[in-house]
Length: 457
Image 1 (tube, rainbow, N blue to C red):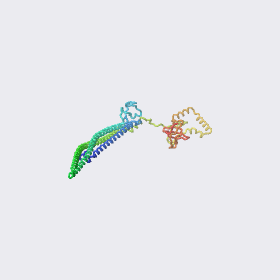
Image 2 (image 1 turned 135 degrees about the vertical axis):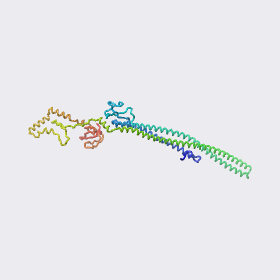
Image 3 (image 1 turned 45 degrees about the horizontal axis):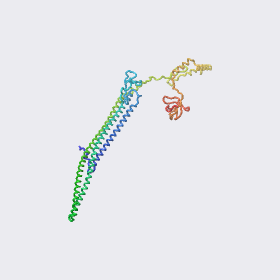
Image 4 (image 1 turned 180 degrees about the vertical axis):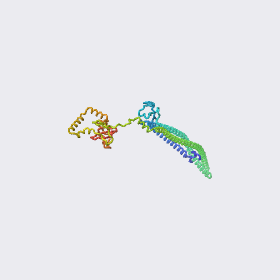
């Protein structure tokens, strides 16, 4: 196994005045801080999405209808949306169910009553919405811990940055001072050498006064060179102390930065891991909640719901009887034959058969008698005939006086019994059909049009 690489061994620079290694490490930490903010933004937006989704689910569950459904499917739908409903057995009590809830005949099906449990909890959809809101809170808590971690790292980094800035500035300043003293020292040494050489030339053949002057100058230059050397040496020693301090601080900073980077990577990795676990657990929780709905759906019986509806809303088991034919003259009631070959007897033919075969007199008498009998029927015959007709005759569709309506939209007839209309036409409504098709008249033409296309004037 290869040994772990260290920042303190890999981020140096041979240039005394350069700090490239430190700058690379500092940039890495700043990039890591940016990554922390990116993860925080991810968690923040995901928390907002989860909260928004959860609230919308709760609103959907609370606004969902389903009140028109009955029996076991109603219970399953209610378990999906807001409140848990169940089928309570009817124990002989009339009018109320558990918790004092009223019972309608529509709900009394197959010996069960559809009601809501006392203190019933939220439906599964609303539970799912609430769980997503809780997930949003957990994500915000994780976001808060990340923000605190990032700020702690910032404070620690700032401390090391301040120390490094101080020692780097001191090192650069002393390095500059040492280099200047070095130049001075070298220049003084050159001046001393020149003065010494001049003194040697003058001392061989020069005058005593010039020799003394040259000797004094050489001595002064030598003293200046020695002083410059001492200053230069002091600056180098001071620079070495600062360099040693800087090296120690650089190593300590590298170690601290590596520890910060290790902590940051660990925290972000764990945070993303926890985030994925939270989302996975949310999926499992959603599935568990929806499993409750599936359990109620397994108990939903289509046949039982249909049977219950029939038992609760049945209007009768026999169709209406055929309308019988009643002869006006013979008062003989004969049911209409369904066979096309059988024709009902005609009372009018029997009544006036004598007119076709008798003598003129007989015919005239019969006609007169028939006319008299037809025009002035006896009270007993009239009462019997009209009473029978009143009992058997079915009421026709209700008629209404014609009313004027205005067409709101254009309509093109689709069949021969319909009427073309244009927006703004004035129509007389003859009959308002229950199926939405109204009988109207315009300019002597009559036909069907949609009633929703008209407005009353």
